[in-house]
Image (cartoon, rainbow, N blue to C red; front, side, top):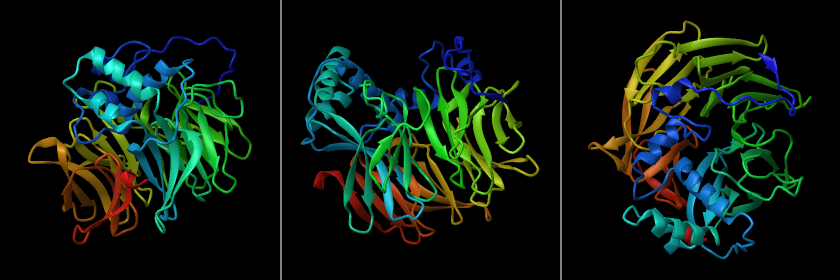
Length: 410
């Protein structure tokens, strides 16, 4: 491993990643595998965080320098990236407001590229995306003064900080995060700061002890870890997949997907361990990672829909289940792994919300609905996004659901 390079050092053009080669992805502005999958055929009922994020990022770029005012009086058109707080009493999410008619026109698959371009410009002139925190006890939505990108937001373990990436183009205000830079919100004071890192950044994630923050940075897609007490930065790896990064909840071990495959890094001795090798691999490649709550297994979701676990002691990979829904997302607690699967072969309409029990190897159905973004609230309830603007909580025992937030009511 190496120390983070100087900002003035000459930057080399990015190398072709193994996952780019596999999917014929070239160029500096490459779309990642997960984004490419989601761009292929977007569902009509709701949009993914990443695909919509790229669309709205293009809108923001079109607005640059236009001097357009963006009033906050428009309704909520979509919420993305819900993240449950460590105490499970709040949900952080990105809330986008804009003209709903223009928003729907922008998603219409039947219009021409020229018409879509006009709709994007029109929507960009009035839209605004911000970081919000929802209280599950009283339903109050706290709008934080931070224009947020569509990368996943991350809670600190103590629940007092939220890390995010910004969508604000104005870089003249040095105390505020500019486009795709890393920002942090102190929920006690309400202040937004740019503690470290230069744009672009993706996927911030706190270690379980709250002492380190990891993220992907720069055109080289470098995996960077910052010691929050000393502000010391370390670059662990380059050419890392931007949207698959997780910590071991029981130790200072970090997992990512890179040119070598699925890798594990222990901060104590600065060594890389390859858990699944990309060298000579002919099978579908890994897309997402998640660690078990006891820190003994790493869950790996592959492009063909297989979900496997790797025993971190022995390195043995075991097939667990297969899920084939467009919104592939997972959360793991002691009750099991919650995920979405297709309904009768339809990957884009209703989804099966299911829970897999690793101890028994069995998967159980919770509910069938037009949902995405499953997140455990506790051992008996799962939070999901329903449609574009609602959050619901479902009991795993009987599938009964309750709406906890509706953008239409705001």
